[in-house]
Length: 304
Image (cartoon, rainbow, N blue to C red; front, side, top):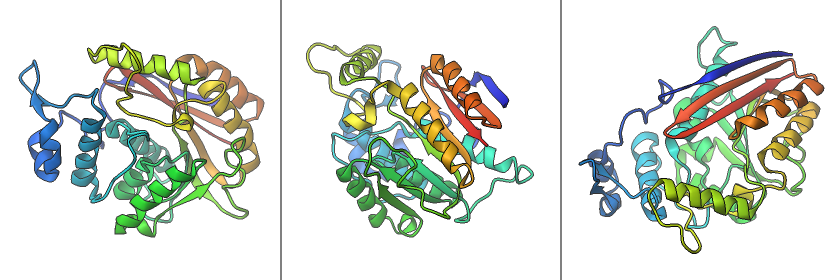
């Protein structure tokens, strides 16, 4: 098994990431006037928002998607995950680099590149960024029917996405690829942002830590600044169990996908995942480390 690692995380976002540098709130509020009510000068004398306020985060995301990705409609229930867009974009750009390795360094674009997004979520963020940046075609999977309908509503309200992004319902929560990848169907890569907590209690503690880091009190029931439903935030056994299941299942689809990938939030999960990949005889494994603010995460990529 060939295993390549990028152990030193990059201190900045990917060079092609449109969100390098500070947010330009003047331009963003011109793009989306409703964002203005959440913008104020912080203690450092800079314009910013309260990143512990879920409504402010949602407005910021809508502005970013409109300004940088030409997304005119992006509405989702307050209970669903509202992701940090710069980090999500980084994953897409790194996947583009991997696909470029077999094209003499030239990033393949257009709808001939097909990507499967496991657990798309109501926000539909990876298909939005991947299609608007590179023209790729996306199939998303989702186990939650309301989330699927919300994502489809976003797709149907944005003409550029309508014929290039589709969402499929995963009927069996035990399955990841089974029931989604159809016979004779081929994908260039799969992507996934797995639920990384073991339980609701662990997810709540994670939120309390996040709020404490933002200087917010954590008495009582915390408000999730990025929100999130059960299936978006936790899975029995956490991300290690989820990705392990994904690896074992990927064996059965090795001829239908060139690359498989997943985010790995916890560094200590890499060693057991490498062991699983060796066990299933993956021929090539890559680990890409990324640092966004105070958070370090990794992309685990493998193929057969």
